[in-house]
Length: 345
Image 1 (cartoon, rainbow, N blue to C red):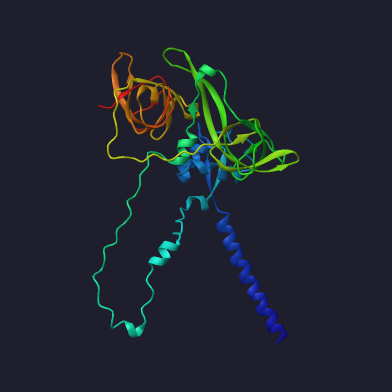
Image 2: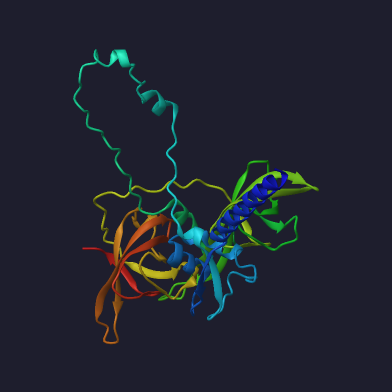
């Protein structure tokens, strides 16, 4: 009897180990991706898992990549297969929805309940937005060069672990101009370049990259400890803090304005020299020129004979006084810094 129990226990143990091994191997399965010239983790995340903001998860699975800005052609990186699977979130059952669920009818009551006509279910109107909220924030902006300095409310000063780069859920120390309270939130920003107008060569301002959001949680060893709540790019010690502000996605309407405004493309996100479909670029016109969020403009390129042709359509997604950020909606060919933009007629 004792031997039978031991054998049964041993058998169940083998089955458990086998099942665990299968589950573990499925969890740890990867797709290998060979880096091509010009690739970034942002680009790879966009192409492979259709979400550029998940690049930190790919970085985390490849610890040999010390700097996510520096990956080389022919390098092979691992992309967890679980990131390729789109999970559908469970619908939240609110008190209002629960109250709307009819109670079961008792057997003896069924005969007394008259047959009712089936009511047509009214589906809620699906909301379409010009751009995702994260995209709006991460697109960045161009500062006004009149001040000749970058406005900030503090900076990242270090980390409990001594690390110098940060992603989602990482802890850091921040130093603010005024004392921060637990729960205070900040945008992490980094000036990437001084933008000069491609035609006039006048200094316009600094292109600011918004890298993510951090939240102060406590005071530790006399320093303010914070956690990264959202990362759009890798953050580093020394990056600046901007006051947190809410951004609401703008609704996409059936008809969009096509204003008679002419200007030039002066910069592109990530300092790319050319842009394509869904890329973010910046123009030298803003709210003071009568532009509104949602406006459509066409991009024009000139050939060697100075003959113009329309090569794309852009849509305004964020505004400053004298500049605006836009997303490329259509692109017949590459859109370059210095190309003209004008009203879409």
